[in-house]
Length: 339
Ligand code: DAH
Image (cartoon, rainbow, N blue to C red; front, side, top):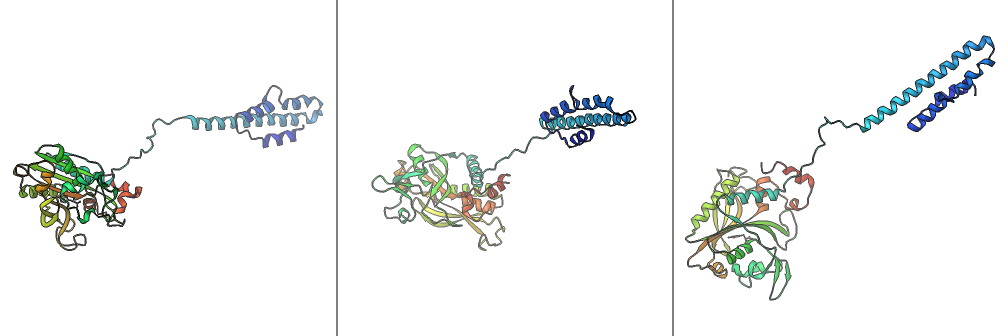
């Protein structure tokens, strides 16, 4: 090989990893490197050309050394870059989840009632006819038992269905406990409804029950006023309208003064200044008796509300379907809790 050929080879060589760098070193700088032949040939070069020939071979050697160093530095720098950890770097962003809006509302409601001595009770979602209907004074032909409202699991004598309300839990508590009873029962309930923005085949309720001697309607109203003001603010007012439920007598629907427009009238309260939030009443003596409680000694009140309805007022979410679709864009908005 002559100088020109070797010079060309040297220029085109591009050692890119440890192996090719070692090959390059052996060929151009090792103990049997190719330049040695060129040096050895110097004795056959005519005297007047010896100097420039020598200079050219020296230049080649320097160029080889330079290339080797460059490639070696590049390789070790890249390697260190990968291996070295920067301990002062802030840690990667940890993804923190959010509570589901209905969980937030449920905890808030439970803590409001816990502060005045209510205990939490829960019951099964699959209920028998007795706990969901009969003990609650539903006459056998009551339309709420109809197939259109209830998801039946087993028809016949031992009828089983998905509970249609959490009032079933108050029956279970009264069967098991002696008065005084103060209990609050959160849970999921089911109704055979077509799914839309305003109705769903399942939703969530909180049922309240207070049984003792001399419990009056005034106690009920005062308890609900306390609740409404704790949840919606001290300026909130309540109003009770006569209504009907089989398990309470008298019964009422509870409205709160519209929190969005301060009762001035807006789209949400349909310009009435009031928002309906729950049903309530004095527990019907038939229900007390069915659950083994002497209705001549004891009286009590009960109330029941939908969590979705309260969440709608608190968070202004108007489409019920959002609560069960698990759309992260919706759920992430509740990271800051109730605030
Ligand atoms: N269970 C009723 C419903 O599902 C809500 C309700 C109304 C519960 C009045 C009560 C009550 O305890 O007294 O619509």
